[in-house]
Length: 64
Image (tube, rainbow, N blue to C red; front, side, top):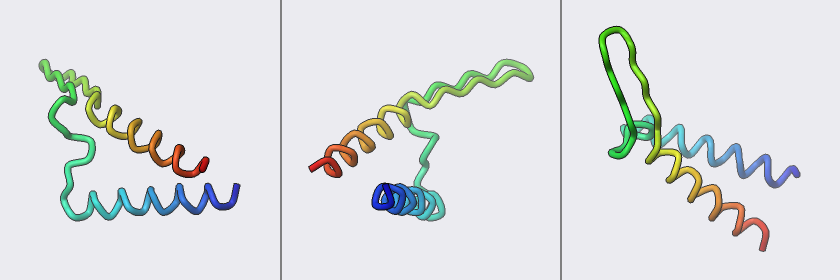
């Protein structure tokens, strides 16, 4: 459990560093954004798919 927590912390820190350098995490092409008047709806479809793929690969590597 400790190893998993360290890896999760490093992944979160890595994502933070990428965001600080200007990588548009969360505003990728394929994300759905609808603005009408004073209402905004945002659904990060592409971001969710990429995050799911990365987590799947990470967990597959950890199980070995």
